[in-house]
Image (cartoon, rainbow, N blue to C red):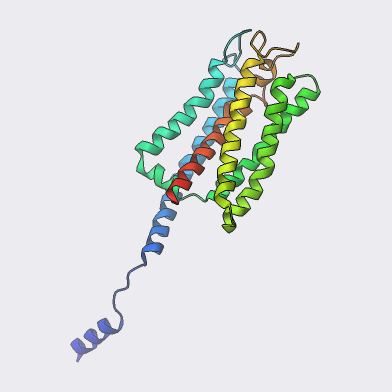
Length: 231
């Protein structure tokens, strides 16, 4: 009798398996919890290091020179991120699990570049750098939230909107980089009495090229990887 009841209970209550989609979502959730902590700690250490270095003379630029330290501050984090994505499967999986709408919306913070226009108005930055860099950041920052909404709703043209933010954002950085270097005292765009190096090496403005620029570039790269994974 007991054996018959056991058999019936096994028949009535078969072993259930989690659907593939739910299993994948659960795995991504666990991965996110494991990686989020180290990422937050890494960002805090990175920002602290950028702040401490800005108080030294490491980012100082000689007249007519190239800002090697600033270039390194931008290139090294981006290169390290690319290496991690290519060599560590967990990092790649974490990036591909991110929300493209959120990655697009993050570029809305680019409006902080409006500080360049304020500094130009007060005669602290040359127009040849401040105008394209400041206006470009403002344009990307204002457009990003609307593009993010289109991505979230999968509205017609949402892929073009996401790609547009990426292209415009990276182009803005390229223009700012060239004009920033060129407007250093003695360089090819040094048309004014004021140079771009003094203010860009002073806190808190120095955190823009030495921390926020590479951070936003990494966010663009994450968006590119995410879009490729959605094809």
